Length: 193
Image (cartoon, rainbow, N blue to C red):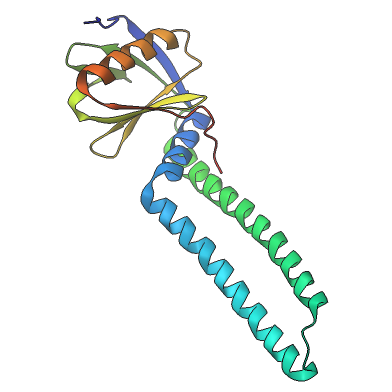
């Protein structure tokens, strides 16, 4: 059995770290994914209904299908779909940016320390100490820039990978994942989309 590195690790979380945290969970949350998929489908259905209406009206007038109109309409649909996808991503990012800015109005960075113990992680921040037992972990997710530790209560611990001790932290998390049977998900290609 491997042993944990008991060193105390320091980290600094800034505005972008918190924004990326919210965007990651928005992209992996099943409820948000269903909502985004539903909105996408509503857009497609409305566009198709409008197209069908105009095609039927045009056919009844001319007794022939105007393929030029259909091609122009499909091109317009493709352009608007891409614009819609882009604006949805921007809307989510702006929403979380405003939320983080309002939450971090006192300071732009939060300094904290992580200490791995036999029973959990102890987080020290602003003079407060919070022990988090390993039994409350539901998943450990690794993205290109962060490691997120999801917990039963829906919150998560954010660990930026720019830490000088990231290899030791990852080793500790792998040990915890194996011993406590916690899912460790590696998402090397994740990005907000």
